[in-house]
Image (spheres, rainbow, N blue to C red):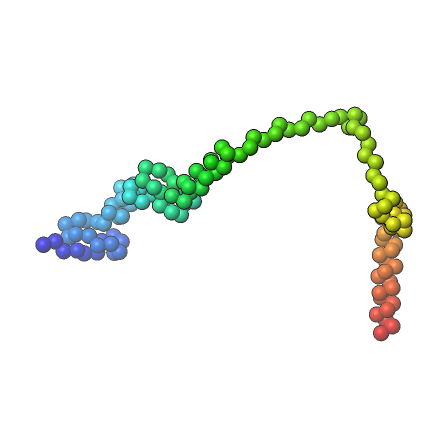
Length: 135
């Protein structure tokens, strides 16, 4: 009767008394990669075992088949619109009389320079500082 003992190299795996090393250590010593034909990972998700004879798991294979069905059943895409030259386009008239009240329309039309904006911000900061000093 053959007895089992621990591998003298890795001391993890058990081997028969007549074997010098376990299969893992033999592969490492020969420089072979560990390849198990019984268990290969899915090439898409690298998480689930691949189906026999396929390189994908059942979940990824079903997803791919669903996507292919959706693409086949989809409506054809309209051809892209041709763009006109800007010189050939008509200008669009915007009716703003009803939408924006007159006081706001004046503010929208007024352009502010960067200097004016900075001056307004400084004035607001100075007012805030004066109010804090009064407290």
